[in-house]
Image (cartoon, rainbow, N blue to C red; front, side, top):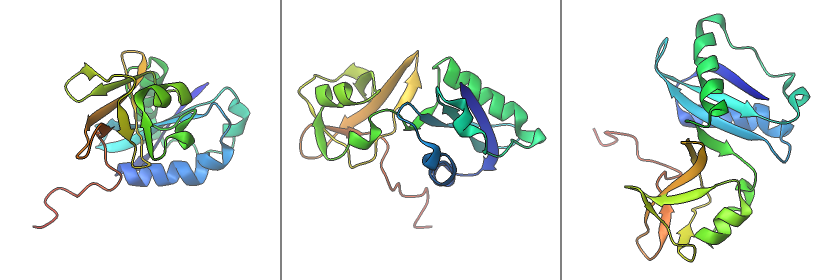
Length: 169
């Protein structure tokens, strides 16, 4: 079962904190949670939660009527495995430190690792996870987009603590 939830979170961090507080305690081994950037009725972050045990989700709040379409969109995109940024997924807790691409694929639900621009990564390439891995659904696969790491190997494209745009202004 995949549930869409839209509560009007303005930032990814706010949405992830909510997921940790409200869905995290319900976590089962096959839980997948995603964030989805939506534009209507105003820009915000909607959520999708997938679990084979829907009874675990019984206590979650309902989406307000004005955000219902955003919740449906998030659930639909997750169901189609078309888009969504995975926050929790099987094996995510093991993606710490530095792993090879092969180990990352073998120990988690991530199905493919690509370098920004589309090139595939070799199985023996090290990935410096920075303990923050957020793959995305793309064309039916859970894909981790990476960039070259300053020392060697790769690192996830998304950083744990991004500098806000125009932070110095």
